[in-house]
Image 1 (cartoon, one colour):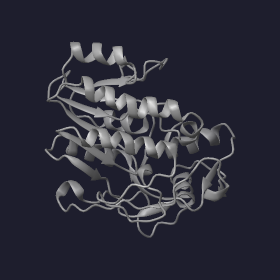
Image 2: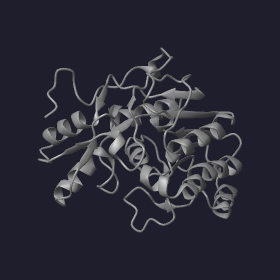
Image 3: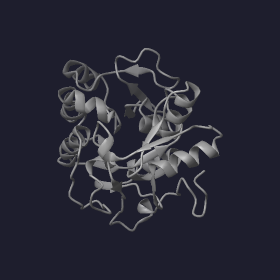
Length: 284
């Protein structure tokens, strides 16, 4: 594809930033309209829940591929402001569908938060059972995307890598809070499919350029607990962080349990991604 034919929404999110960095072709990258200082490579701002802005954007430009990573991903913020979360995550997705060119391919980057972690493993046919407002907005947005032709939903667990802000994502969160001497607490009984962001982003591009539709899971070789992951990253990157541990029941916002993503597919696009923590490695 040539320049201008690929739109990436949510380019400063954890997923969007990784996908932008992995792009092998020119991409028109968007952040939200309130971003004060977008990083290099993110040249435009737009709010997906702004009907006029979406109308004007797609009246002027007709991308062939749209990768949708935009949204409110802060679980606690979604619990505090559910109307805002639904406006951005669900209404914004509906506006994108309403105004995007009918022939454009849409790849929606969803989340393992559509599952609770109280059952599983979870493949693409597993019933969704979110425990949070955030998870419910993801389920609602997925339903909108699933009803549209030539569209794909990609679900993933934790992406481990750099963030656009230097504060988001598990790795930069550890670095930032350690640098500021802020407390760090992780959830003992939360286990996720953790993968390196670079590997996950490359897989998203492979899926985007394939003809697959429906739902695809990005599967890690194994799940890891939050304490295990934090200890391993702190040791690997010499962060020197002191990490406290709590349980799901002690947290204000709802937390996932053991969310192990699996897949019912057997093709090359379904192969497991390398684990963040290699087999036999000591956590810290």
